[in-house]
Image 1 (cartoon, helix red, strand yellow):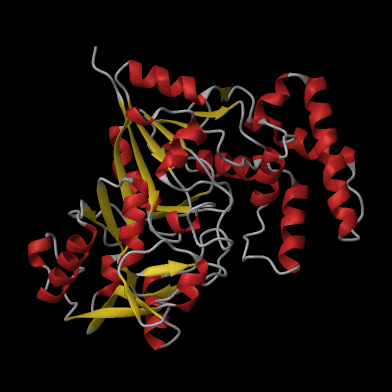
Image 2 (cartoon, helix red, strand yellow):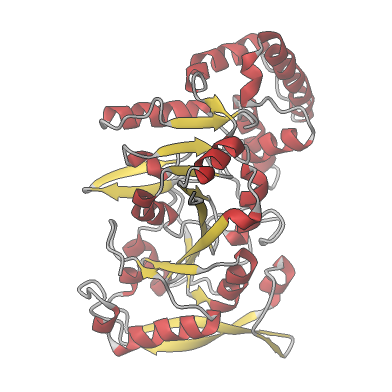
Length: 419
């Protein structure tokens, strides 16, 4: 019997690389799509027949009516956001119920997590989206999070939530905030409990069944490699493992099942919130990139910081994820630029570095050294790589030589226009 396989889609920068669009493009081939980490702090924007769809928790594959989707235990799940997504999609005529599954182990984000997130941010945070993700993961590692499967036993659920409320009240006392009203918290959850009912299961066993019957599974990540809790620009990172290795622990999967790793990166670079950004453009060129690329957060609406592509960081992300299929997005944003740059190395205290790990100290102190590429025109009209101008071809060739891989697909425009 033919065995199935697992492919992975993840970001290679500081998030916002256009992963949702790539998942949507690829997902027609897959029978199951799984979100493996992150929470409502990430937004995937997908245009289907001119209609804008923004999803924060449900995998993008839900937009295909013949595809099942699942939320793995590595996700911090906000049932209020999930309810809004389900209601939005059903209003758009997309069948949702019976097609999405939630792992029993998935931790739940409560309103007090979001409140705490905002309070910590006021005391000098790292640019959080205030969606309660870090406090929720904290409670997981402190071993008293409320998880989705807890609702199957009323007494167990009540005990677990009461314990979590008691702990979080101690934190709120530190901020001189009033204590949580337990009745209000329980009532809030009752309002959204329906999102879990009939959806609970074991995602790891779902993966096993799908692979053994010859199915194809796509793992969908959020944020990006440079925001990984271990391997990103700590402490200016998210609170989960955004890299390919995170797929294994977050979804209960053995490494030998993974076939391909699609690594998505923009033709330039962006980041949201605080943290080092050596190639950042705080000038008219940067403002043009932001305006043409519509670089505003899908979750918060915040302006994204913008800059030139950073090849040492891209090569680092390729390595750490074991990327097999690099995918470039938003090449069309550079259409019409007379000059485009890419960082090819760094100068730190007179020493040149072409390979690095993204330690915050290094990136704050180092100066990027650039290579310049001219004549970026005709990108939007081109239907094949052969139709690109010489400047664009030289840019793409430089990237491929630097990372040691051929770019698998190039995305331009809002919908499925990959070449």
